[in-house]
Length: 203
Image 1: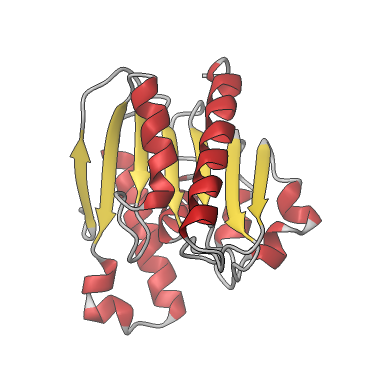
Image 2: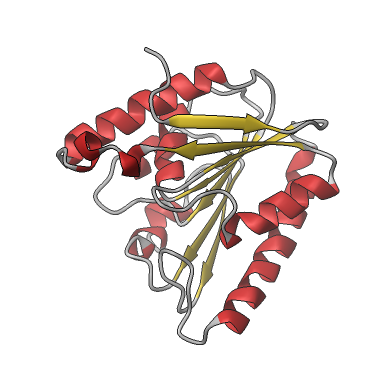
């Protein structure tokens, strides 16, 4: 089965960071900016994967189960299409569900960054239990999946480092506006830099 909803663009570099968009959140949106900056600072190549799920009426009108199956099939095909080498995967929301389907199919030294993971009423948590990590997870306190990320089961996932930012919702906006959002992205960037340095020795 060929890729159906994925549009892949690649840039040159040493090593590779792969950005996986959200349903309606492309990789040029703010939450991806810290990852892009970290990759550029390290001379890494950046692969951007945008998805066309939201533009497909059949997909959008399908049952949850059918949508989960379609996302899983796309993720498995994408794992086959991407480079077989240690990479850093960075997914947002739907992109994290794609990542869930890629677990066990990527290079063993792959590093996993879960931005606002789509855990509520999805198969993702069960899939993540099979991910050896290392993983970095970021979520907002007002996200619908936050009760799951606060649970012992999630925090005990293998190789998991987790950050929660008070007041942020799933699309990463905050009641205090742009200043709070900018501060959060700087903090995410600092943490991501440290995490990449720490986990680099594992690849």
